[in-house]
Length: 293
Image 1: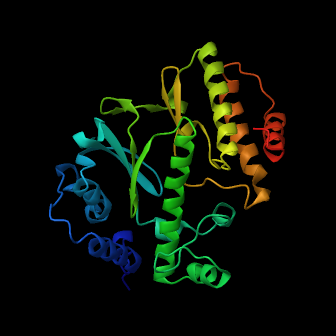
Image 2: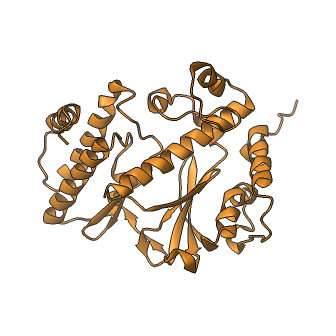
């Protein structure tokens, strides 16, 4: 007996419904966007579902390369439209896998704005329960809430002076932001960098200041490591806020802060930077709780 062919993420009903909704929402657009880079990709329809809108809104002119690809999202280098004042922009596109991967996200979801199946903010318990029901519409609403929260977090932190990419726009399953790199070449990840001890100490101090600033803005990154920090000489930029949390709504998230601090301390210890991660995290948390950050 032959095995049935595994259904691709792009062909499942949740994804197809998302694509239809995106097309209906932006059906008034007259210009077609067809970047050659995406022509041979199996998931090109999914990628274009949001990138085409950025093109129609005169934010990007083309897509020229794939910068990075993770379990749930892929980042593309786009040529920016002249009206943006930038040369390049980065488009982070969440893949269809996102509909199936939000299974153990309760600690991160607490306190986030939840939306119902029609995209409206769920303001009472009944609506909140509805938004969590495992229907096709509810799962799509949950994905929308998740991506919107990441964009809003990045806006908040950038406006507060944190070392994060400047967010530009958010539509559907994509977030458009400042491109960090040298021309079209992306900045490397911190874990790929080779630092001198003086530079390491300076960057460590910068990242701890950013962790404090995040918390002063009522955010904990939740997944901070040398793998989601971009590096250019004497400069770091923190990325990937998909798992950020608001500690005001969930006071049990101190372990996430502690883990973020511990990972940074562990990475920089190889360069001789001495720090006690437990004491450092406790001090930051105590000052936050006493409104002293």
